[in-house]
Length: 579
Image (cartoon, rainbow, N blue to C red; front, side):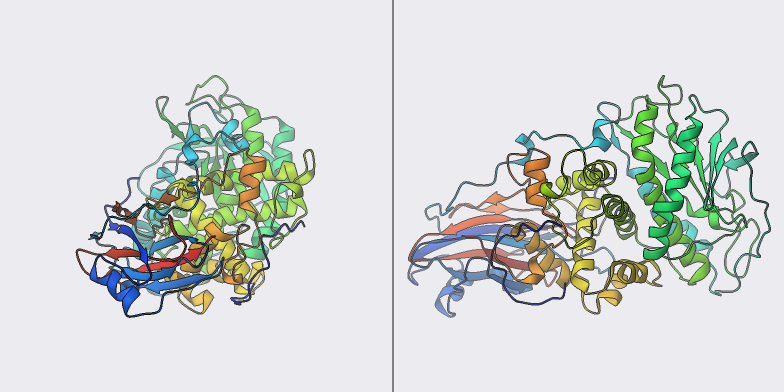
């Protein structure tokens, strides 16, 4: 969907880790008064005495940058009005604008002006747990710190092994196609210099995959499971990946990806851990054993297109207890996720000659897009259909596909929605960051006017990374699109808004309330009372949703300062009228 400005007629119902200590501190105060009799900070006076107040229709938006956040005069009209102010800290570590900032506010104490009841806290909502969580051992959540370390090492240690010359690729190797029963040894140490070799037995060979099981696995899967995974990879995962991301390399010469089910993945989760690892890809496996003009040697790598998967362990021999049923339910989504990482790294390393790997937050968002693409195909649905519960009837292929491939994305997005102020949209990797970044990528693909294959292929095959990569594909500043997306988080399927403030592919409000049985949309909205100072902590890429009302016949000002002065250019604000 293009960035048009035509207004929608109304809500749609279309069928079809520790965060770096870098915070923005906006303290906010609502001031209301009759007519233009406004007392309070100078910014408030200037907003209402020297400029005409903004008179918005429901769904109307005023967007500001930097000092424009300091005070905007809003008219309550004859019937009163309700607004949400959406400050977005569009700063990143790389931009140099992510340093700690403190915003202070003073103002007159006036009557509270919230027009309606605030959104209930998502902490009290009790909804159905997604399959990906319900099937996991009780009390465990997916471990993203390990994955973040791998992606961060690509940006540092592994990128440090790249050489300026794009040079020739690794000399082609001629390898026989493995056969069922063959044994192979792989180093699982995830290190160029250390070794932890495990022997695997080939369980199934398809046109595009070799499935291998560690001979020391505590509980093997059935032969039919390996066959199902391989054929689903051939017919579902790989065609989508090639269409949307590009061809992988074939540095080991076998014409296939190796999927190694090994207890080494289980062993990454200590018995006392509260998080678990389900699978991973390591870019060191793509580096040569001996140096080439393109890359330094990585003797500990396996010189193969390979990724690693959790194995059943019902007795907890290698770590927490994992049933075969859980592996069956989770495997295809994990394979799609890790395969994007493999293609992304392989093409940057050996095809496009990039000097850097993708930033972790965007790399992970692309892998969650890979899971979403598998959902669309399996569900026989497409992007842009505003999918809600009515599109996922119980017992249908779409219902099953949602549980298998999309429940994790919605769980992550729910985490993001509950505290978007403390989440770094383009900062350190974490489940909430993944939820927000995935949602933004889907919004951006829909808005771009390009096909999904063209849009995502451009991102995966870029020579730059992160915001610079996005900007090149968008053709304009990505933070401007992000600012528009922050409005869509609140407004989509709730208000008649411009096209650029719509999320056309998903009806999240319907899904969270009807499918997951939440009492309300789980967005962490903050009620603002006049005369009460609120201090918000916005990390890099952080967002907040203070909500307030202006009574009939009065004017209101949300006043934001940084250390007694104007907010920095990195603070982008949007004022959305909601009633």
